[in-house]
Structure formats: C-alpha cells, structure tokens
Length: 403
Image 1 (cartoon, helix red, strand yellow):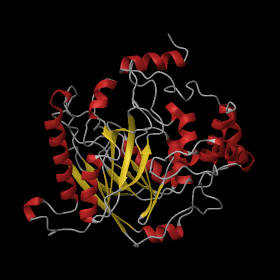
Image 2 (tube, helix red, strand yellow; image 1 turned 90 degrees about the vertical axis):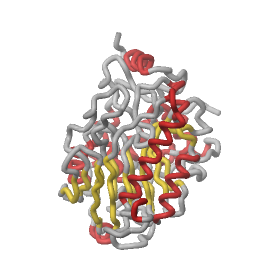
Image 3 (cartoon, one colour; image 1 turned 180 degrees about the horizontal axis):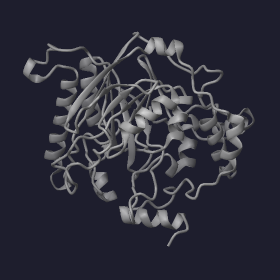
Image 4 (cartoon, one colour; image 1 turned 135 degrees about the vertical axis):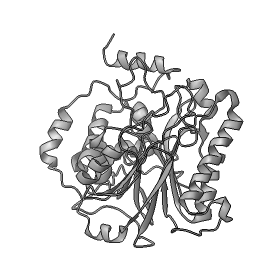
C-alpha cells in the first residue's frame, strides 16, 4: 500500500470537524478511506467507506426520529471509589453494587420500595462521570490491564440490564480494552440503551498535556493513534455523536477544550455530556451550552473520603454537577459536593424544530487552523506504549522538544 499523506489527513480533520468539511479535500479522504481494510467500528458496525464527515450543512444535521417530545435527564454525582488491585474482586463488586444502587435511586426505584417507583418520574437518560465504577489511580499499564473492562463484557452487560429494566439510556465512562488494540487502555465513554445493548463507544479525543508535572496519562485516546484509528473507523468517528430516538448524544471526558465542544455541536450533538473526573464540568457546561446552543450535562465526582491516595475533596471545587439549556440557563444543579442526583426535563422535539446551529465564519477561521502547527503532534502511541505515568511524561517532554 502506498504511504499515506498524513499531513493532509490531519488538515482534512480540521476542515471537516472544526469547520464542517471542505469538498476539495473530501475526495482525497474518500480515496484513502476506500483503500483502508474493512474493520469493525467502535459500535460494532462496519467502518464507513465514503469518508463522509457528518456535520451540519445549511443549519441541518443528521438525526433519527424521536420517540417522544420530552426527555427526562438525570446526572449522578457519585464518589470516586477506586478498585484496589490487591483486592480486585471485592472492591470491584463493591463499586458496581454502589453504581447500580445509584441508578435505582435515579429511577426512583430503590430496593427498599421493592423496585417499585413510588416517587417521581421515569428518567430517560442517566449520566455518570468518567470513572464511576473503577475510580482513578496513577496505575501502571500492567495494573490498568487488570482493572480495564472488556467491551463488550460483563460490566457493560450489568449496566445494560439496568437500562433494559428501566427502558432508558445510561452513559458512563471507564477504562476499556478492545481486542483490536492489544495492550492499549482506552479512556472510553459508553452509552447503553433500552434493549440492554451498547449503543455507542466514544473514545476520549485527546488528553490534556503538561498539567501533571513530570507525569502524563497513559490511557489511549484518538489523537494518540490517529492514523490507525482513521484507517479502521473513518474520520467521522474521531468525534462521534450517537443519534438515538431521544436525541443526538455526545459524551466527552476531554476538559478545557472549547473548540472540540464546538465541533461536536456542529456534528449535530443536541445533548453533550461532559464527564471529566476531577474537572471543571459545571463551569464548562454553562459556557459550552450558551456558546454552542445545545443542552449540556456537566457531571462530576462527589467528595470521596475513601479514594486511595487522594484528599477527600479532589476534583470538587468548581460548583458541582449541572444540567444546562442552550441559553446557558441552569435547569438543575447540585447544592453541595456530596453524593447527589439531579434531574431536568428537556423539550427535545421543540428544540430540534427551533434550533439554530452555531454559525462559524469558516472562510475566516480555516486558513488559521490550516496554518497552525501544534507542538505536540498525533500518533504518540503508534509505537511503544509507556508503561507508567513517568514514562508518559518523558514521552511528552521528548515530543515537545523539552529536556
């Protein structure tokens, strides 16, 4: 196979995702995608062949028919309880039991009521943060391979059973393993649906660099393996949107990345779940909703007194968990940093009828995006994988030309 022009690939990503696509580059992308071998996409479907990037055109974007006019959304602000690799079976079961309990509470159907809803309404979409089941630790790659979830696998199936029981969608983050990516630990957002199956697997787009001292994260993101990812799944999957019968849903664990949030809006996201553990999700959700004219759910972690190696309040300093409308108005908000659940009702049908997708002056912005060259280029994990956070930090400094 002839060597690919990866520089042009990256620019076509900027063109398609950041500025809704450019026809002149689409033909090149089509040819490259058609030449790639067939591969299963992250959703289990076949990779698209035409190289299309599904972004808004003339204010219209792709969707599927809605099954109802309103969507009841819940956001679970749960504790971080990290799996202990020295006692994996017990601590993983403890964490899973806790998450299932919170899902029951979000649906107003706790065990004490015999699983019967005696209070409140059914929730159509339950949103959780980045690591509600496994927690977060500076694990080595060997340790992460012990606690990462196989997808599909038993953990997602258990969450899927709850989704089927309640006829709802459940969105959560996790460390994951995929058979096509041996030894990679993927920072994954998972959406399961009312039939109990996985609706979408949305990889984290990229990790923020330079914020962890001498360390760096070792979970694989799209940007870390960009060329191979695009060969396998196509450009459209670099920033995926799940087009469901309750609305177009995107979930991201990328923090402080407003351009990426804008791209997801341009691709048709109507509900954006911002799930960074230890991040500023509430503040970002309010700004993002207003700027991009979409609903946002900024869901974070609660005060976590039992999380190994961290202070109780880690990641809880920015205003809790929120659900925000497209004007930036907060519809629901936690009043504290304890474990809590908030709910709001979204008039999704009216929103879809009246929404005006954000207008970008593409002709003005695109030359700058094409001329800009980032310090840290993609495909950092295309070769050897760092085994520890320290090794990842050394890789970051090397690729940025630092000592």
